[in-house]
Length: 160
Image (cartoon, rainbow, N blue to C red; front, side, top):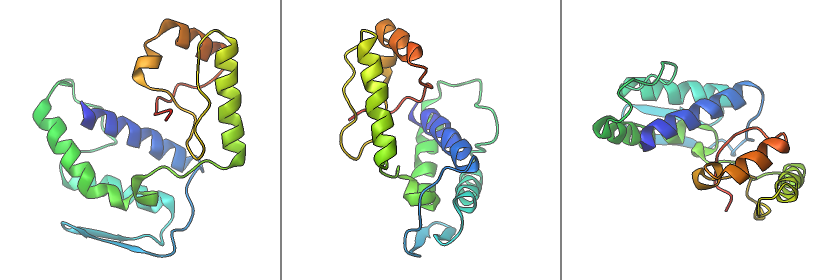
């Protein structure tokens, strides 16, 4: 299951990166030590995503293909997690989210406030963390109604 979620997360990240959202320069550090793969962090975020996807394909996971119908395959999920762990350093910022800037923090607080005003006790994002929500929150009908009333786009993620 984790592998499928990771693939979906990477898919969302790829779309965001290709739409022009991305991290900054990391000082020219090199990523090495991957079995058969290494990358310079001096390329663009799009280049880094392409290298990550190539690395995953080399390990049997084509992120551009549809997810397999046999979604409940623990062995495939284990292998996907292993491949992701090996390839993740190729992603922009090593696959880690960049901290939100002041504008993004303010937008996150506004989303949380709106959700509270619509009847769901949503905490403000913690300092340095992006606005997000987890599966438990998403499965709560009150949260869904408040979330949609606020015009927020569904992008599950940790709030803390």
